[in-house]
Length: 347
Image 1 (cartoon, helix red, strand yellow):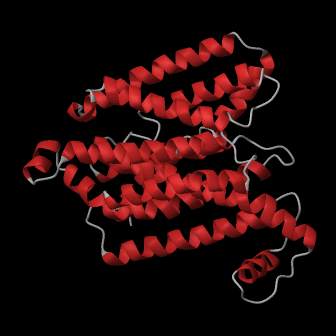
Image 2: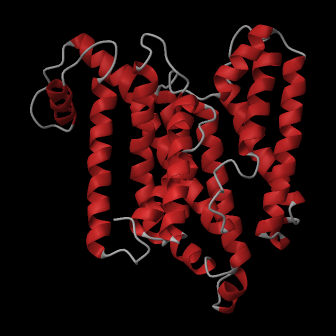
Image 3: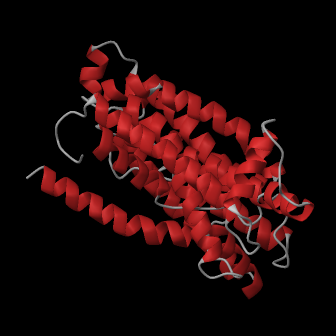
């Protein structure tokens, strides 16, 4: 399946079917696995019952656990995985850089500074304030606007200058975050690090509805730009000669990817590697066309993050591992393996 030849329609169909099967398995695992054991049969029956098919055999307590605790966590994980994967693929396409990820333009550092400010100055290190997501979202968007302005004053920007500006803005805001942390208490620092490592433990239906409109809007824009990203892959000058408004496409894709990523980060914290490895895996499996990579990233990324969260909340039960730690432990070796496979295929 891993070859340098163009993917056949049969291979794409197999990968698509396997991705959907993995997504279904992730949903069942996310609802069934936890401290309270609930059989898969009852979970599936409850799912069909919610769709108006048959009757649920879940007890009232089990129904509360499934639909009020596990379901919002599952749905938020699906949304986060889909958005981060699509944003990573879109960034890789618009910058023509396989190492690009959703945090390339300073989203992570801006959100981290906003959350740190909320925890240290608003919560006084004693609590994580309810409006921490709002300040994290504001910080992320301010960081992207700074990067966009510094990297070429809007429409005159190029991919290279935007990347360099993103590095500079990230370094500046990370330094500011470190300064704020050093002037805070040990409790504040601990809470900040818990938030920065990412988690779905505080997921609720409120947080789901808060980020869902942003994610749907941004994913639709990114996927719709797949054909334009395929044209841009031949080079900016060649794309312009074919009539593609390169800078406008870059602006729209970066804005959509950054907005969706900022919304996710504000709700779940920083979760790394999802936006890098998912598009890379799909690129090996179904080829380099973003018309295939981006739609499949929605489902592949959603399944990947839910499986990672299932590991995070069960491997050390009753304690939880930070989700960002799990994705890093899975993502780093996977990324090394992908690079090794790519090197073998090109030699």
